Image 1: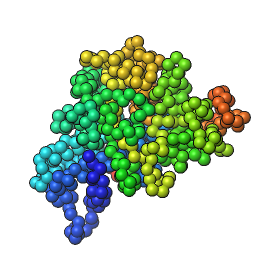
Image 2: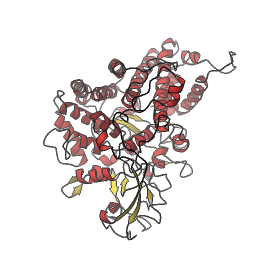
Image 3: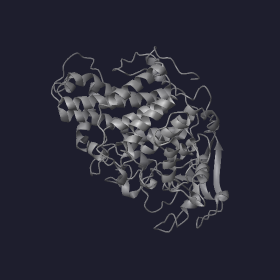
Image 4: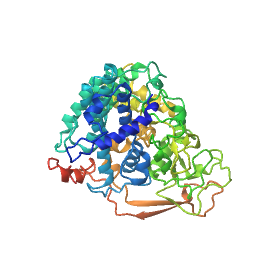
Length: 550
């Protein structure tokens, strides 16, 4: 729906940049509209472009993110949280201070999106040009997005200022309880103001706009994060699952391809056009191309993008690889979820699984940095998904980026029931087994949180790999201090087999991995559960108080 507004997005972003910087001279400039007049005189098309600009902000400028590191995008935020959660061999060392760019840019990312939402929420009610229907829908969606961004801020930072208004920069900390209450009431209030899909395949007609059911899914997630299990189970079942508007796609490997855009499993996604010429302007998934296997270290199998990459979070950690080896095996067969998530070095050399047009396979002369012999497949750029005018650096993926899938809704519901919430006509075990069956695994015999073979925690780890949930899950379960105690204490580099022969698989015991000790300290209790409030904000705002341990 929003593809036609890409050019308007760019114009609006430029106008917004100008409006966000106060002019020290109180002299009207010719050709420049005041912010209030921009919103006051907006017609229907312009109001929709305001919302398109917010969606653009959520996705993020992945090209700038990939090179300047002056911002984060939705995908790079997943990458950062993945390193913090120990799922990638590029381990987070837990050495950063409140000046660390990850903490600062993440804070700025969420508050910038909220600022744009607040502009819509506070300015559009005075508009007399656009239709009431378009205005009300834009305000409702902006309130929903503001609440979703705020719940992430609270989960990560604990007690950040509640941005229920256009902020002055002088606000102090808000208690988590107050912010959670705001998030709950806002999501519940605006959900009924948003449309539902017309049917299970109806998302394409709505595009990337939020639906009523998607907002309720986030409300259920907010309840779950607060351990309000009864409320979470009730909302997730009655308002999302029971509508029968969503379903798992049959083949896990079809996810994250352009063919899965607006599929029945996606509740909320960023709409990336297939049209040539918009690769950079629409902030396509450059990060996914950037976070590729390093082609100068490894021969790339057919069908995968082989132009270039920096290999950031391209390689799964040994801990995750071992977990998947054990968890994702049905008899002697790896699950289809395993095949679509990672591959071991031995599997890459297995020509029944991967083929190489030039006949060369395995490691090249150099090693793979931050690698322990497991290679990420999930969201790895495939040739079929890539578009761009001039090769790497200008190449992007044109498949939509999904923010929430129905599989997560089912797992959230299963967890809420396992922790004491009341179940509906579909039991928590039913929901869990729907996810397991699609993955290619046998049904779990009972509903458990901690069972290593079929528990909810294990299913979330396998299903939601590289979707930004692992670190937050470990923290909210109280497991982070044990699981991440040694995270980042060494740096691994992978060099293939010890004898250098890559003609056939030799087994993991023959892998050549060099681990170099770092000064990393690992996750520390009573500190790393929360991100620090950025030092720059503390220095500029004496009303803010830093989180414990920082």
